Image 1 (cartoon, rainbow, N blue to C red):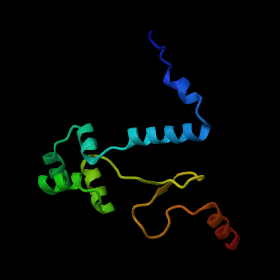
Image 2 (image 1 turned 180 degrees about the vertical axis):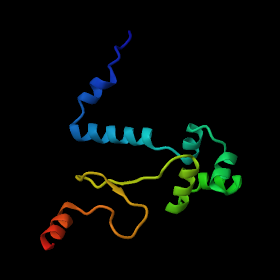
Image 3 (image 1 turned 90 degrees about the vertical axis):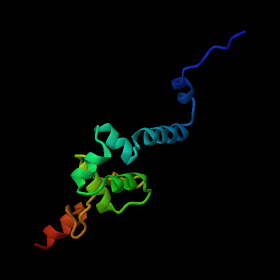
Amino acid sequence: MTSKSIPAREVFAQLPEEERLAGEALGRAAVEAYTLRQVRDAVSLTQAEVAKAARTSQDQVSRTERREDLMVSSLEKHIAALGGKLKMLVEIPGRTPITLSLKGGRPVNATPAEHVRKTASA
């Protein structure tokens, strides 16, 4: 006797919405998260080529790819050597994601509340 298989979408459709959404988020995160080595492989560059573009050694590129904790400036330099641009996104539950400036200093864009205060005092 064989049992009939049930399509995954039907199983997921029966889950409570909160569980289904949490599962979907975890699945997206697993697919969207790449290591530096995977990014380098995706753009078909060797460590030596990245090292040359970053003006560093192949050994340093290897160490950077293996590290779990990097300075933002080091990561930005590495991504630039891959031909990309680093952007950081802040995700706070219940709020719209915010792109974080990597340059520090004064805010690039004023919030709507700041804009109202500035125009009211002018």
